[in-house]
Amino acid sequence: MGLLVFVVILVAAGFFVVGLYNGLVTARNGYKNAFAQIDVQLTRRYDLIPNLVETARAYMAHERGTLEAVIQARNSAVAGLSAAKAVPGDAAAMQQLSGADNALTQTLGRLFALSEAYPDLKANQTMMQLSEELTSTENKVAFARQAYNDAVMGYNNRREMFPGSIVANTFAFLPAELLQIESPDKRAVPKVSFGT
View 1 (tube, rainbow, N blue to C red):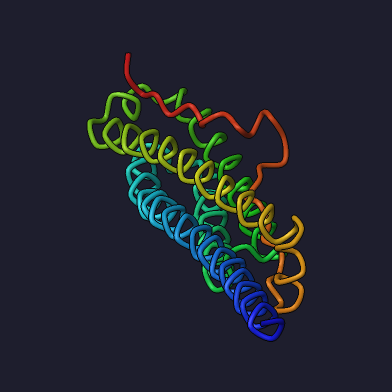
View 2: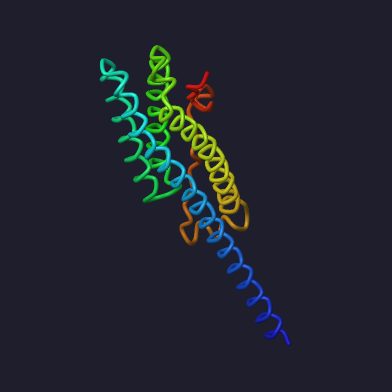
């Protein structure tokens, strides 16, 4: 009878550990899926930028430095996204993506500030449409980032809380990094209104 009780306890403990392990795997896959949504939205954002620059180039020929800075920042952001996509949740990759995306936002802000001096550019239908799409995409990026950060927080909580921490450490479930924006002024969606 004592051996049967021991076996039942051992089997129950085994199921408990398996449940914790599967919960960690589910949470890890959840934040990776949430990052995939960020990838979709950021890729859309990055794909819009060359069209925006080409439209602006026709009107802002002597602002070549600003246009080139936008393209360079966009290329850095694409590289940051590729690095983050390879290892979602990795601290270095998330910081690289965050920094590159912040730099892109700043250069886009300069482009939009300069474009205010070009009434024909502000009235251009293509520019207005691209600006509207970019604003919409920025909102989607913000929602995707929030979903990702929520999923990372859930995963990190599972891996850090007892008894999940024992299983996480045993099976090398590494912490995941949030995707953050460095300063509150960068949290705002860049103003891209060209309408009247």
